[in-house]
Length: 124
Image 1 (tube, rainbow, N blue to C red):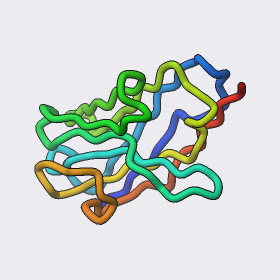
Image 2: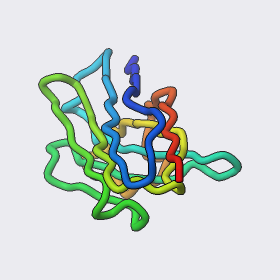
Image 3: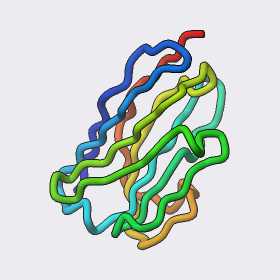
Image 4: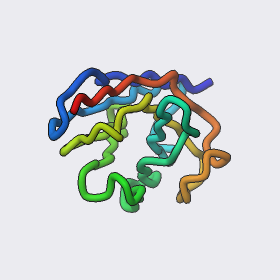
């Protein structure tokens, strides 16, 4: 059973940066594609970014492209999301998720394992 634990969330001013981390245990992260999703109050959970098994293919939502960077360290079983130029609309609970697919499109149904989330708050 794979367990994911996110950390790094918090309160930041608009224009600031945060780095989220996701620690995986129970299996080798190298076997999975990884993604970050987020859910704001009153909204559906949405795709943010993904990285393929080997790290060669990344994908971003239009709303974060150019500001966020997803990365992975398979040796440490860790996934990261560097978030720069944060906006109030980026405030949400951020979740990391794993998929056994080599490549993912960002559909939530592709991901079998989910963390509990970390809260990101952006003040204007």
